[in-house]
Length: 94
Image 1 (spheres, rainbow, N blue to C red):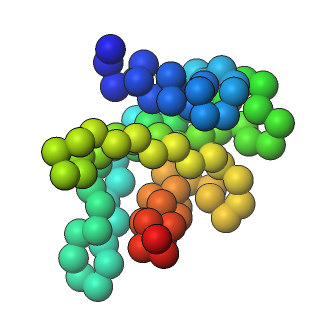
Image 2: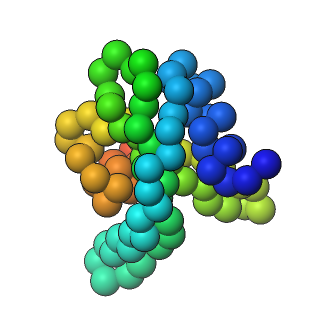
């Protein structure tokens, strides 16, 4: 299964709506002068979600395991970059 299809599956299973791929956006996020995250964020239009019209999703490798992250476009998230920032902040709190 390709990355886009895996992300679509994750969105559908997690949020119970149909995702339609829209775009790929390169994001590089720095923190204190160092790269905190660099990669491609996939943008999906959501069909049938009660609160969000879009979702941002990506995969990354952590301890030799592929992980998937999905962030809905609900304030304060308004772009792929803010989705990354929110995900990093959420992970740091854990």
